[in-house]
Length: 212
Image (cartoon, rainbow, N blue to C red; front, side, top):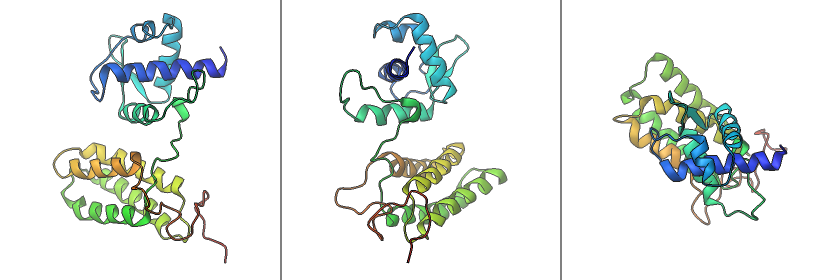
């Protein structure tokens, strides 16, 4: 099976499961049932499900059905926001890059880090979780200190912070988790300089200091 066809099958299974389950992490469905609705054979559907599972976008239940993971939900929603250019041009959902994802200004992200520091004592995290969260904060803050921050590296740091906050998704952890999710997944406000552009006018993919 060629690469383009496998992309299509993964896309159809992921988005088909999202159509059925929405944001319900507990809703599960057999891959063959999802595939049958979009003219995939059971073997094609199972192969696509296996590849999605390998990438952490779905997980198997005890009944051999699949359900979306948190990252699977977020990926499906980002993919579905984009109109397909052509019926045979399906994006690779296992390596999907949304050019608008994480396009926020340094001030937006700095304000989030300040808020996170303020609520950190109230978060229900053990010592390891707090250490991991501190490491994530420093990872992002290090980018903000550069003359030309890397949007890619800052985004990776925010995704890491979110993964830690998901362990504390109750009480004070709920609003701060929602806030970092918006920073990661929602485009910036129109006309607002984005990360890497606010100070230098261009993104620096390597996350290094600008040349004098």
